[in-house]
Amino acid sequence: MYRQGSSQYDYHVKTYGHPSQFGYKEVCRIWRAENWSPEELIRLYAKTGARYFVALANH
Image (cartoon, rainbow, N blue to C red; front, side, top):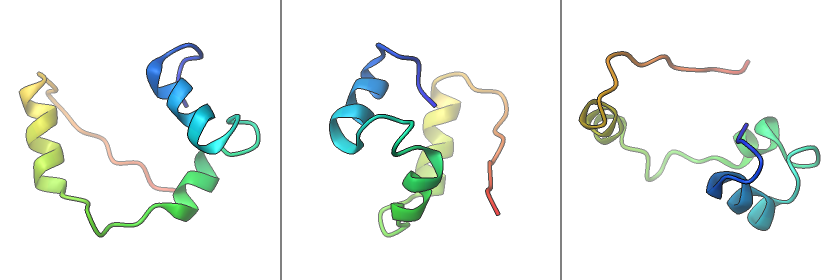
């Protein structure tokens, strides 16, 4: 998920607990799309220099 020691990792541990106890699948269960803006996300990726985007899905 995130590299240990990174700000994202520290946020995850502080907010949800250790990734071994609350990981990707648990985050997916609580995620909601009410505030999700795919157009804004793609603009952000392009602005930072990304040249491609790959969507991830878990079924």
